[in-house]
Length: 249
Image (cartoon, rainbow, N blue to C red):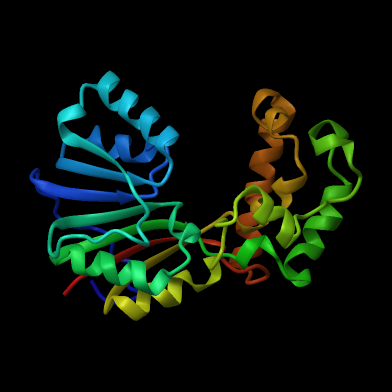
């Protein structure tokens, strides 16, 4: 695969060993396990509570023999060289402080020809969107039905850096640097940029339960995503989300 070619197809054998980093409750990882094409999945997370939920899910699915749940901080542990076929980050790489160090550690842990796979938020750090990205969202928000707005607020309110850190000190700590960091560590990187920028900005002010539980909300979400795609395709907003497949040569 060549850098930037968006070539995501690959042959997957049934004896591949995978390592997931920052898996949380591991919903996506278990979806991958359910395909039956992987022999073993090591699930790493810093939260014992999240890993307990993952262990329960593994037991309920009958996949306990395929899964190891390991509570550890990727910043401090060592990984055996050439021990994994695939390393995955599912919305967790944007929580990593030392991007270069962790990605290099993952590269060493991959077998030759192995892949790092990540689906990530790559927008502004700590969700500090520039004014040119938020101007239309703020205007659009004023026209939204009050029943879909959080706390019935008339204006779209976005989080400050302090508010983001108060909830999670690692949230989007270096998110905007992810593409550069991956391309620095790996010579072959395929990137598929996806939609969601406008929605990401707008959804800070929305009543999420109403979006998914009422017909009005369902139609509204579809409309927002149509606008999102239009703004990105026209170059009026950048991509805040992407898939990466990086290959170890």
